[in-house]
Length: 136
Image (cartoon, rainbow, N blue to C red; front, side):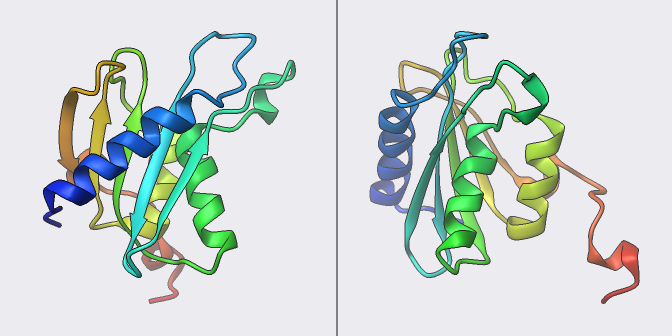
């Protein structure tokens, strides 16, 4: 997927902005994510922590669930902003694979610099999918 400069800048800007809404009182590690769907719509999400850590949600999944809740099913690009531009966790990679196997991922640091630009297929090779369930 090739993004226009406008789409790329908007994804990063939206992710930076929504990162300010993260609820991270335990880790103090705020994350913002913004994605672009095949319909051309943008959706955002921030991480939301809980004292019972397993019930927390990452920004990437928050954005994906926001998009799916609005009827979207295909992600074409995703920007994730963290302090250092760190990589997405395994749970987020799996959910991304469900809705954006061919998506472009941008890992961005707090300065707005892209630390990693990669296709999801390369980022999460050999993901588990519907083909493994015999549904294809």
